[in-house]
Length: 505
Image 1 (cartoon, rainbow, N blue to C red):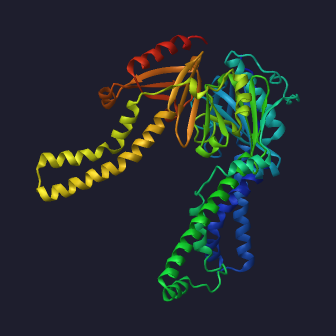
Image 2: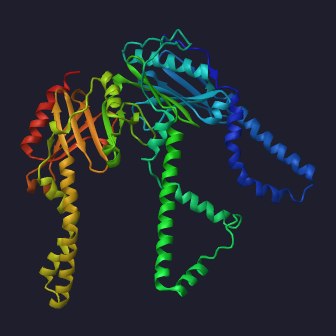
Image 3: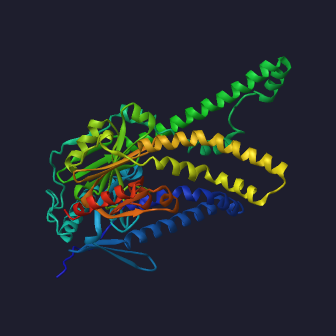
């Protein structure tokens, strides 16, 4: 028999919250309303405005009233809709995790959003926006408990469905970021994304901002009149100033984005799961169940690596970060010892690069051929076509020159890529390292590898190499660890070594 609690509604504050959220969209309708109401008396225009506001308020109230949710033993049932009714049933055996999200406006109202992550969805399939913080904690505890029962897994301490109140207990902090570290990490998040927005804003405020009476064309005319050296100095000065301003804006944008995202970052170990809290305006709280972790990825840039910093993400079965395909940040910016401390409960360890095997030297040849080999096509076409010898000779010389010009830098980059592309099976863990400027190191428990494939392209068959691709649950296609350009015998030996370990669950 399936038991269920009574149907509940969202917090009444959701009505005001939704009205405030929709207010910016009404700004675009203000000019149209003013144009429409200019022929009416002021009191009548005000009465019309109040009527429209009342309609919006009534609709928001009806939307809130008609939205209900209830928990049964095996599912969360959500019903919504004013004119047409929608009923969604989310079975607990599909729920991978439950997160609590609190944006700035919701925090002012004392509310929170509950997100349900399901393994097969690319985004949160179920969301309750918004409920009180106490109700959010209750829902998370009950849903996790019943989801664990549906998965035939032991229920964690404090997640008893009969206890709706959160259990207070001391949990060790595995990793945290002070404000100083957050600001410092922002320096490595250089971003020019917001420059287009800033530039667009300047176009609209140009007439209002008191730039003064500075005439750049007049300054340049005077510089030209002075001397050629002065003109060159003027151009160089303007160019350097623009570059410096762009660089400074990129740094500031990176720091601001990092502070908004990582402020107050704290990762605690609750015995079988990690709890992560972070965010300045939007306060998010996520839980990573260790049993759902499929692999770990250590990421860093060239400068970060030189200074001894790196980031750690965990691939889980849930939807993870937006656009990250199940990846969860657990150490955004930390030292090697910080990463080791977070990996320890997962029984994972970093591998020394010297203990891993480099890919074949044929990797360099394949990179060079695929990147600039296309230049050989028009050269061969000229030889076959036997065009005008004089024109062909000039064109041939240009192509050969371009080929030789690109050959050296492309070959150097390919050799660096080959030097940093390493792999190895250490114990029961598969390690892959790739990247020069932006480097990634995958740590994959062999038992989590669902499929391992050996592939050989037409060019690889000519060069005598093969690539090994491993796939884990929850990973996107472009984010899986792969070993490119090893000898076929080594590729099959690696596959044969991993296959028996996959059965050790």
